[in-house]
Figure 1 (tube, rainbow, N blue to C red):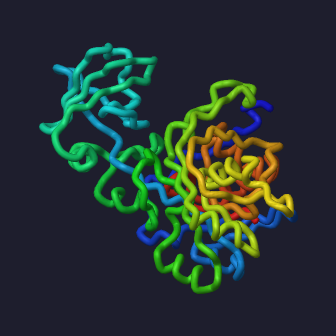
Figure 2 (cartoon, rainbow, N blue to C red):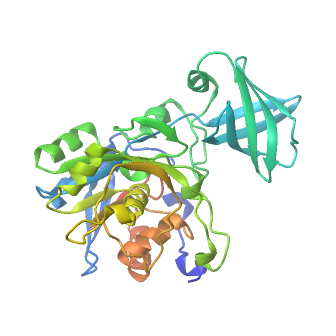
Length: 344
């Protein structure tokens, strides 16, 4: 399976640089997998495709201001917090990485300092020194880590807009973008209609966005990300009489990870979910057998990425690439702040 088989052309002007003022006014491309039929709708119309008995599963992770700008003498560095370890040590990405050595100390404003105690290429481990609450300090000195393809600095509007309305548990360095289109009002209407709402957590990290560097995609290994499924969420999912409608690729990976655990097998041999937490490095690519996901809500993804491979696994590579070309021709907005896609 070649990486170049998952490439497509996207004009730069279709990469969304700003969020919409009203989340649910994003466009919605509806793909019917079996027939190949495509519909052009508005996201708030999503409720028309859901029926009583279905369950909507969403990722309630919350993005934190993980992007830091520090100085070491006269040199400036950008540091992205990626994973918390013990004793005030964080795994980080450093730019520029070649100009910094172990033992380097950084100053981030008046309340936070850090020392590089280990380095592995562009990765490093920084031990921070501070007084008080670390995350309160981050709220002062940190920046929201917008994706690299958004060619501007994060602003006050992003603090709210680059976060789902149901974000609850802090720990992500990127938002689960498929969920950005939901408003509280739309979720309320969905619930009133008799559709279940189940919230699970997967802290979006480097694993979701790390590039595939091998032409043979099967040589790629996903970096593990933390997930958690509560007993309440598991119960809602297990009692679903209709379809499991999964919001976002991160949610898919968490659910399908748990479904493959031997503990999830029940008497009728259909895979189910049980309460658990842990780390998943599940890599979903064409040929993958989905056990839980019946329908998928997602955004439009970058070429040659694990995200594009996942939706290709769900709907078929040929069909997905045809739909992406259709979306380009119809001027859909792409990536994090872009439009949405419903795959039935």
